[in-house]
Image (cartoon, helix red, strand yellow):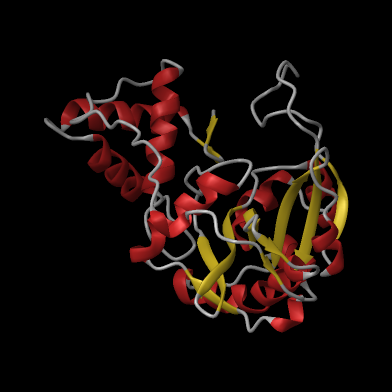
Length: 282
């Protein structure tokens, strides 16, 4: 059975059940850490994949395969924060070339502000990014103009996978080498022709080194999904991203085609010339 991109054997399910009953008082966090250590389920940087493991355990419990220890505390989703720092501003109207842009990685102290901007002004709102991730502010004269978020790649999508030419096993092994531009927002009061493409160009030039510094490996390809009913993907096209096809408008678990989702255009941006060889050969 597959959860969170990993195949779990019958023996591993039995191991999880054994750990639950054999270690009195074990909580869900320690259970996921112990399992990851036992089966050596690790991220590319060597750390345990405990967050993916905890999500997998919750899905296993929902499907009736295991019974997890009761949670120590019930977490309530907090209401989105609203501060004066992210209030709407007067319209800024300049040519893109008139800005001296600075691209800054979001620090822990500014994380809530990035979340608030996205929640208030991005059409998808804020949800936590999945897997390895980087978030950016783009500023000029200390004023935030745009925000970007990069996270884990989609588990599978036919246009991308056909363009790369890999099989399921190779994809499983090398998927971490793709990063997903899952959020991109130019703030609504910033009116500047070509600013979006300039921002994309600047971030594409530094994301490899930033990712290497944080996660100790270098991605070779970026992807993004552009909702076709809302956007044309003009800024991606202007910065040499490659359109490779459309999604089918189905969720990743919708095997019966019951839940129609918006069709999205799939765009890719190679971060090195031999990206295909790296993704296929590792």
